[in-house]
Image (cartoon, rainbow, N blue to C red; front, side, top):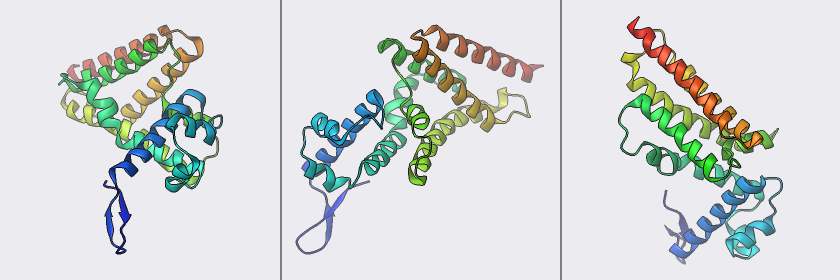
Length: 214
């Protein structure tokens, strides 16, 4: 979506590139800080320092901290393809293999961060016990996009699954395994917790696929 501003004639016009760049820097700074410190522990001053801007620039785009949180959640939601799925699925055609390639991407992030990685949406969902409706809706949209991608893989493999397979439930189950595995690996600082959960999930899929043949 193209950002727009109001020109001297009162007409809508595309926002200047510098303005878009400033907004992007603010959102990216917030994404980094919310992931590293948590939403509650991140101050506006932290965001200003990380983005290298003054408070006027931030409040021009985001009247409050929650408005910035909404923008962060929308960025994750809209970027799930280029930021997560496309890198994980590059060169992989089989839909079931794609599911486990996505989980392998999370494993890579866990290892690269010495097991400090946590799913940013899952972490926010745990931290914000009673979020305002708009925040809860944006978090739900992120989970829905994720499970939608897995569901699409399962639908592509539908002919290999038992006829009574509920692909929506299976997609939600995959998300539950991923979130729980990431949380345990982070808590114990041991990727083996993630590996064991994914291994059990793989065995579940093997039985599921074998059930079609049986």
